[in-house]
Every structure is written in structure tokens, then in C-alpha cells.
Image (cartoon, rainbow, N blue to C red):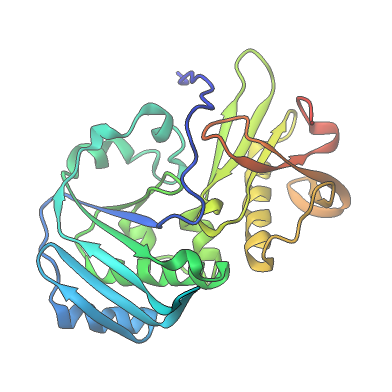
Length: 291
């Protein structure tokens, strides 16, 4: 039986450009890896780093190849790993869990069995270009997957995605599309008592880029989800070149096609959290009104 959720546009969106937060979930407590081991694995995945703090509670690394520029000077961005602490799976409500498409069969088991977590985050990275930050955060993720072999699952706070750890370790995605895979969530909703559907994304605002929204009927939602991920990738690769009233390739028989053009406009989101999104008007499949 499907859950019924109420629209709640009082829920605020995460701050654009805010920290990228990774929760690693474990069945048993884990120790902080040694300083030398952490440094070696960080350098393997990220490049030159400097460990500026390391104890059982916190490990911090300056990514020396990634420089944030501010009015008062330049400084390397930082990558932080916290010590292991307790994890309460009960903190995830039904709305969040309903959109964990990559781990739908295992989500309840994970939240029941995993009672410990390690949190990792970036710092000062909002000052980086979007492509550089996207790749750095994913390099950091690859390093964490190697450092914590007993990790059962990864939860990405910025977008609400949950993955089995083996799916993170075994991915074969290159470049910034890794961020689209792990850092952006295409959500799906049926609108009660109608044939209308909504697909939207969460997570692009971490890079100061727009999330997407589709309000539609009579099209396979899987086609729309695929379009959303492809369009998000295009926006990331090209620094969001899409302006109000411009068009993008639409979908014919499940594939993107230049033969149909869908018009885009910046609108307020229909589904929480409250934020501006790039609304994609799907021609004959469009539902609702556009302002």
C-alpha cells in the first residue's frame, strides 16, 4: 500500500553550496584508521594531502591540489572524518525512506542492523568550481569506501540516497557523473486522485546548480527519471547554460530526441523542500499550470 504524504513547503531546502555530508553505516563499532594509512589512501584517490589533525574523534586533511579563493586569501579545502558513534535509524521518516530507490529492499534491514556510523564531510568547498567540487567529493567517497571495508551502507544527506556499500565500491562510473549517481536523487510521486505524476531532483543545489522538476501525465515515469539524470549531468558538465524559456530535447519512446523540444522555466518547487527549480514543461504530457 502506497504511503500518502502531504505537501509541506514550509520545509526549507539545505543551504545552497553547503557541506557534502556522507554517513557510513556499520553493524559494529569501528576505530579511526591510522594516520599513515589514511594519508596514503587519501593521496591515492585525491592527490596531495596534508593531515592537520588525527585522533580517535577526528581526522582532517587539507586537499592541497584544490584551492579555495576568498577575499582575504587562498587556502586548500578540507576533508573531515569523524570518529564512530551511535546511529539511530529511527530518525528517517517515511517520506525520506519512500525515495530510497537504490536500496528499497534493504533499507529497513540496514536501519535495523546498523547501529553505528562514521560521518565525513567537506569544508570550504563551496568556493570551488562546480565540476572540481563534484569530482573531489566523489574522490573522497572512493577513499572512504577503501578506508572502511566493514561499512554496510552509505547515506548521502544532501539528496536522501541510500546505497549498499558494495554498490559504491563496485561502481564503474567516471568523472562528475559519479556525483549525479550518488549526490543527486530523482524522486517520484503520484498525485492523489489524479493521473498526474511528479519527478524532481534533490542534491544539485550543493553545487549551486538548479534541481529539476517535471509535472506530467501519460508517460512512463522511468523515462522521465532517466531524462532528469541526463539533464542534470548536462547542467553540471556545462555550468548550467539553460535560461528561462529555453528548450531541451524531449523524449520519444524512452530516448532523448531533438525531434521534440520541452520548454524550461524557473519555478517554485511543488514538493518539499521549498526551493527554486528548473521546471521542464513536457508538451502534450504536461500537467498543471506554469506561471
